Length: 488
Figure 1 (cartoon, helix red, strand yellow):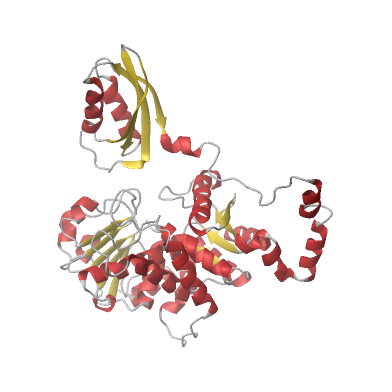
Figure 2 (spheres, helix red, strand yellow; figure 1 turned 90 degrees about the vertical axis):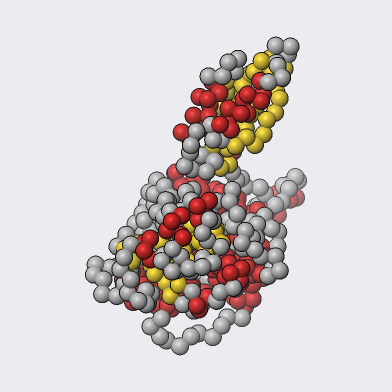
């Protein structure tokens, strides 16, 4: 059975089946699953008697429809009885993924009197007298709000606040697991920028930082800019800055692999929304040779009409030669492709037209802009956002350490210097002596990553770089980006 999507753990199922107690039954079952295009990851014998064996077979499938096809293939086998099918992803989410756990035991009346009334009144008065003590005496010192309006949930679109909650729970769990940061989902039943800003300003006293998540462009740009101006705690939009940090880190090492310099390469970026804009801004600040930005309006170029202010800025500061053709044509002779847009936009033949030792970052999830198997036939380095492929570019490499560093430094703002420092720290964790075409970023489970990022961000916060002289360059982008359009 031919499937176009790759099986992944995100669509893992466990099938409980009974089979005849003979030597060939289990082999027939696993062969059938493999022929259906799934990947068997576990097989456990649950029970048996002289006539039958009950087995839990776990396999990765490509999507819900493919899972149904795998089960159907088992049902037609002689002597096989499918008893139950469990979706392992839904099982993991039952009851949610996070909880509140008190740090004090509250085992005695004495402890209760100090943690709550009457003793807590003295702490309240101390904070009233000196508001800065809130960072020292409350959860504020280590707590982040993960804020979303549900308008751009993963690649699924505008699902609303309730449907965004599983993502925000997952984000909070990642904060704790990788950065030791206590984070809590704050999903808002409004998509009005004024209301979002007002709500976040109102709840900000309880938090040491704000992580904006899955808010659609252009609203995300406006919300972030206004909150940064209004609050004295860092505001960080992970879809923009987390992605940009990880891409810069990966590209730093990919260029080391192929022996090219950033200043000498031409980059094609598919998707000029939140993530793409932030990526291009950071690459321009780092001195990239040239960029062609491609979005729904085509290749952004000078003289193009009907552009919003952000796209207009990109048109004026990228695409040096004024290319106006399609995305596939833009790749001709390009050194780097970065996709943060939509699946299956390109073919292996398109990648073949790129420069020698090309680099391809196809980051659309779950299906990338080009099949990574096809891309690897022509490109020297290929990365995706998938955990089942080499070189996974995953924001978890960045945001836990970034917030850990900002919280430890009592930072009031997130800065571009912090982003660059974080990207360099991620790249350096791999080590120049260990990088190769399949290892350009560390594993998300590498325990060195978050501490290294935190230390780099903390140093950048405590020793900020001098403010650059005013110029019409990339520093103007945050203001212009207030009306940017969403990635397709």
